[in-house]
Amino acid sequence: MGKWFKSGSPWIWMTGGAVSICLIAVLGLLLLIAWRGLSYFWPADIYQWQLEDNNGVKTTLIGEIYDREEVPTERLIAAGHQFDEHPGEFVTRYLVKTGNREFVGLDFRWILGTDIVSREKPADVAMLERAKNGNFYGYPIAVIEDGKRLNITGEAIETSLVAHIKRAVDIADEALALQKSEIGSVNYALERLRLKERKYELDGKLTPAIKAEMDAQAEQLNQDYLVMEKDLFALRDKAARDSVVVRDMRGEEVTLKLDSVLDVSYVNHMNIVDKLGHWFVGMGRFISQDPREANTEGGVFPAIFGTVFMVMLMAVIVTPFGVIAAIYLHEYAKKGPITKMIRIAVINLAGVPSIVYGVFGLGFFVYMLGGSLDQLFYPEALPAPTFGSPGVIWSALTLAILTLPVVIVSTEEGLSRIPSAVRQGSLALGATKFETLWRIVIPMASPAIMTGLILAVARAAGEVAPLMLVGVVKLAPTLPIDMNFPFVHLERKFMHLGFHIYDVGFQSPNVEAARPLVYATSFLLVSVIVTLNLTAISVRNHLREKFRSLEH
Image (tube, rainbow, N blue to C red; front, side):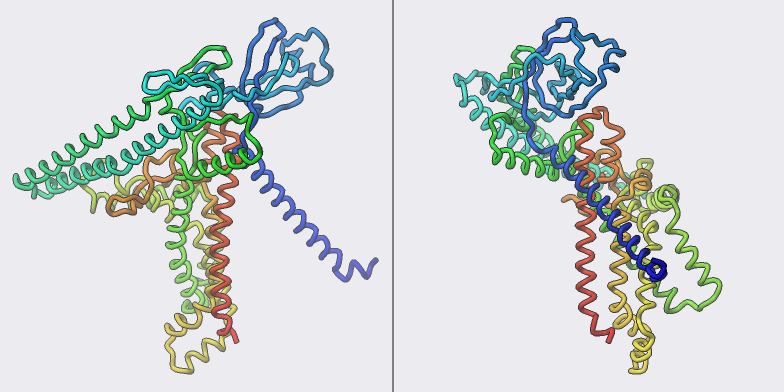
């Protein structure tokens, strides 16, 4: 036994066991997040309950079971609940999503198993997903087309309702595209024209001829806007042409305009193939659509786009600066106390809290640098800031400084592994030092550079605290890239998956509805980070194979 301990084998087994436990814990956490997030899109059965509480009040409830738990009976009795018969040590309690928010109030409620008189799963009950006020549960009993109630019953109602909803959604999408593209372009052109006129005025170059020309351009744009606005209102009226009559849990008939209905699902008579298709459609909408209802419903496409765009912009900024700094420290700087202090400072920068970088970015980049840019190049827009307010460029620069030590250290490690004989051989063959660096040293160190970039991307993609100060917002009306010149707008604010998780999980007015979205968005953020890392790893492996011959 003593020899076994002295051989070091126990420490090897302990290290391997610790690594295995950590790996299992990480995989278990990812599987939990994936299960809780992806199961949100699986269509849940819709039940109808007949309830009777301890006061004899009878009610009907329609909804989905969101959660269940066992509650100690003594706690319920202490809270004032009375039972005709003692139900035992625990009572099952169900969290039911009832929807119908404008009539019921909160769209979640707890019910006790002891209050349930009966529970059934009707085949003709439907869930209508709406753009406002959440889901609506009930029995569609009629379709109204252009003010006329269609004389259809049974399965014909479902077929007709699906077709009418698809028509309304297509028209609504057309109206939204018109509002975002053509009308948005006209508004953007009007604002640019206003700023141009203001600049001429500040420079003292606004002559009557230029003023008249700009007024004519503005008048033409306003005429175009009125025509597009008329088309937009016509599309909205066309989308709101039809309605559906639904009998809700109160037994009352409610008429819903189809311009606010996004989809209808008769979940209770779906087979496994239909549910699987519904699941894929739900995930596709979550990835491709914009958020709505205070980010508790809809999709996260702007957050995905903002996260990837900001990380790529950060990578473009941090890589050249990190590589140049590492090359200078390793290849040109003299060995001495100053160089040693610089290396210590670079290493210590990696341990600075990220919020400190956010405060620095807000003070230096946004207020000082951005404010100076506004004074020099955009005085016509003042006092409204252009670059003097948080934006995606300042977020990328802040995270570039945050991840710069990682790139520098990784690149220096790669440079130190290159044999000195390679440099000396290149110099002996007549190459200059710059040519040696550019053609020999940097290509051989490129895998280490990519390693630093991978670590930088992994950290930057998950940072939230500094971004809250320098550019990220709850809801961005426009993306940093659009079809308006100059097409890439680095001064705009953006959405981020990490901040979206924080906002939905801790700032949402509807906690129960937001909880599954937290898991889904978290899994999506992990997937984005893994995708970015795998892309960088594949590039690194390609570079490693390409320049392997230089090592021999």
